[in-house]
Image 1 (cartoon, rainbow, N blue to C red):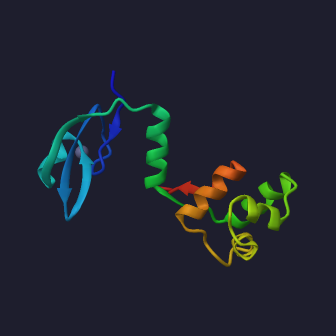
Image 2 (image 1 turned 45 degrees about the vertical axis):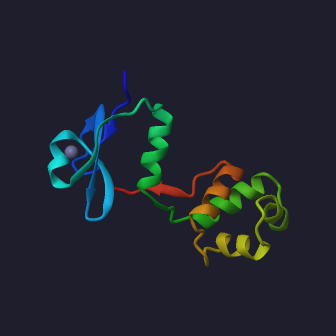
Length: 129
Ligand SMILES: [Zn+2]
C-alpha cells in the first residue's frame, strides 16, 4: 500500500506521481497532468508516512499566522522564559525575539521553524483556499 500523494496541478490524490519540468520548476503531477510539462521521472511511488506527507503539504502551503507575535510571547511566557533566556536557547539575539513578538519583524523560514520546534507551537497556517 502506497500513500496517496496530491497532484500539484489538479489536486487529485493518486498513488503514483510523475515528476515533470514545468516552466523551469520540477513539479509532481498525476498521470493526466503529465502532458502539461516535460516528464523527468514517471511513476514515483511514495511509501511515505501520512505524517510526513501532511508536514510536506503544510510546508508548501502555509503562511505566517496573523497573530504570530502573540503566539510566540504566550508560549514563551507559559514556559516562564524571559526573552533573553529564550533567545539564548534558540541561539538568537534578544532584539530579534523582541521584534518577532512585537510583529515588527516576520521570522524567516529557518527562524520560524526553530521557534516552532522549541516552543511546540505553529507560526504558520494553511492558506485558506
Ligand atoms: Zn493532476
